[in-house]
Picture 1 (cartoon, rainbow, N blue to C red):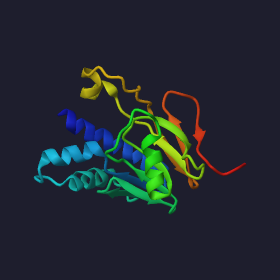
Picture 2: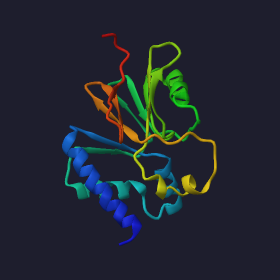
Picture 3: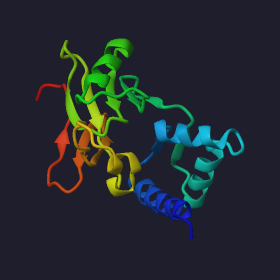
Picture 4: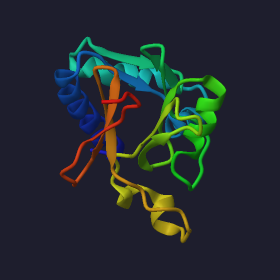
Length: 178
């Protein structure tokens, strides 16, 4: 089998597990998905690829969006913008100032939580779940970017929780006082 077909099989396997845990599982597009779509030059719609993967799970609680964002509970913007900075939470800070929402931001490969300057909005960088040995530009370039922090965000009862992989810690992200 090709590496790509193995990736698809692994994606189906992971989505089955996650769809069994969560009431609803949301998938939004990211910059690498758009790169693939661009390379396909319209020959094969990227939405068809995702719909095919989702249908292979046999689950009906997976929602795919061809957009790089979604809104949860009217107060959270979950996004994977094309923007990047080396400093954790800077893109999320800019997005919260524009959208006036709490932000869960992908793309930067940081796993971090903080607040906007006003203290009103929670800012989250969602980390990454990736084998960096398979990311060509990560292997071949020498740069001063911070190391990627492996982990993900679990959204539960209206609040995100940072779930760093390989560490025995869960970090609740809340701006509510105890």
